Image (cartoon, rainbow, N blue to C red):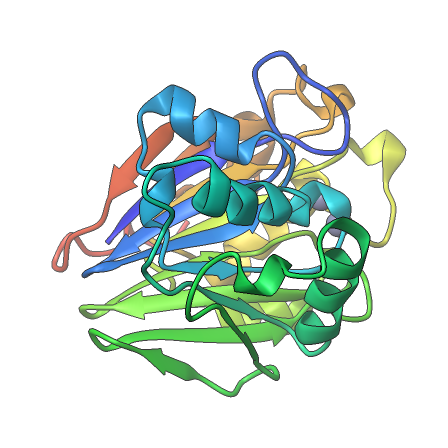
Length: 262
Ligand SMILES: [Zn+2]
Ligand SMILES: [Zn+2]
């Protein structure tokens, strides 16, 4: 399985970070987890196959995680010749179908038919969805918006967990335990602490409880970036920490094994 962090930014414009979007490649599937503004353009810039996304997986409906869904559908229909003929599936929390219908009402009544075989699958927390190639998706409620979930993608005995946006959550930390890679939001410094995002200290606490094989951090608002985030994580957990950048990627292989608990 391979993770590429395409967009590691937030609602705050940034010269080097577009909004939220991550590519998970598992078997023949190419799953785009969230698609905020700039994700489609960044994929093109990075030379990534934006046309070959098989699933768009949404964590929640905030604009910095969703607005490029319209851009992708439009590009698949009008941005390439011939137009895309392969189906695409949007997977999201309960309410995703209605969300996509609202997007279509705003932008183009035929939005859902821009790609043949377009479908939406909604999933309740802890109700796994098995995709072709024995890739499994499962979500967990997280404290952010009412619909917000984190997603785990399992394939070939490996597990990548993408937190989306969330505040501190013991339930999430317990559910994420055993992940080979945990991609966790790290939005704000402690001086800006809010209940629906994480500070580096709170990321450290989740890492200590979930003890993933590797921790990747993303979704940085500008005030958190000057901090020694890695140092703060190491006060509570000693596994490998990566501050994700747009275009960074990692390939997971079975048998690498998690690092020793910190
Ligand atoms: Zn966000
Ligand atoms: Zn959000």
